[in-house]
Image (cartoon, rainbow, N blue to C red):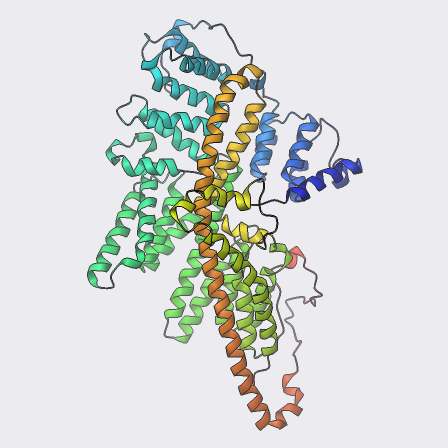
Length: 640
């Protein structure tokens, strides 16, 4: 998400000028006393991440394993967790001395272990054996230096795959995940015939949980025959194969013929998706994601019962093991999306019910599932908006307006872009015959969103041709680069919605880790930094352009979707405007022919009677976090 650099600089300068450090907010300036709770407190106050990182560095704190785990569980940003690990009390590794001499290796260490069964024979060069021993001894810095030197000198060309594999393993131990992925991929590119293929591919699978970017693995899964999937990578590769088939189904979903043959082909394609996803073990970290897509495929086939069952499996699953806070949040989001999908299924069934009683029951069921989404969820605002629609159909117009008020509150101003809520608000007031309010709402809607639509349309027009799309990295940097457009009318919430695109979010996560890796390289010993580090930085910088191009292409696709949505909503706004004019005409005709009704104001009095089980407070324009989601209007409407 784009950040205003000037604001970040001013924040940093202000803290420095005050001379108060972070004591102002109850945080200690004691260099040895910076704790997990204090850092989480900084995050809670929305201080810029670079300010928090600088405070951590200046504190000189040595963080314990428990404190780092606390930061992970509390959902601290990845760069903050990364910095805490670098400042760990057990960070003896950064003090590792790069050994120029080749350490001796005991005979017993030549025996391959279960973890390193790929070690090879006892006849291998002594230098390679020594490097492997250093990895086992948790000295990855020295090991990576030694292996890099062997590769640079091309000393053992027949051992290239093995050297690439162990260089990747050492870099992974250094938490340089992109560089590790690069060298594992060098092995995998050689295909199943390479003796290290079956070891490197599962390692790439493991790294993808950190990077959240499985694009390279997907290409491998498509090209590699399933019978050649390494045993330790089968679950992930079957998941990626099924996911890719589903993406292909989405692309051609509109091309299926409506006849029996077309439906047979559609069902066959979806069943092929589920066949691959069904091979993912229930003990795999990918199981919940595969089960989630299974739910979507069942819903595509109108098999509501099976779809609901799949989504329930996801949101009811107990998961307590995560590689980091990012993965934890990702699984939490998947559970919340499952609840939203179940609710949407009931909502869709309601629209098809012929019986009024059954229809109302289904809308009530949908509302109950929307309300299960936690207030702390990334999708809470989305659930409130959808629940507002359920209540509209249930006739609870004042509840609908209350939920829309929450969605439009400052609480979600920077995180949730839901212009549809304003259209729903206008429709609700239209049902209440409050035509002047409707006109005011759609007038402000057009004024706010037309400039946004115009900017997006212009932006997309700059990348229409193949030649232009080859420069998609410029599209990415236009909004997210160091010199991002500061004059944009697009809001922070808009970009937050764009970045919820799963594929785009994965690439962005990978780019963030690459930046963190560059910082980590600069922090290492000079001898390593000026040899291995220089080489790795060159790889990362070259790859960054490639990943920014991918991010740009995904951004353009998502911006097109948002532009289509805004065009549709602006058209709906115009239609509502036309309907208001017509309804006002009918209302004026009624008033003209029923002048006696104008004098009888008693029929329009508001009843302020309230339930004895609730305490009602009048809204004074201030929003409080504990009141969000509970607002209820007392509109009686002006319908005659």
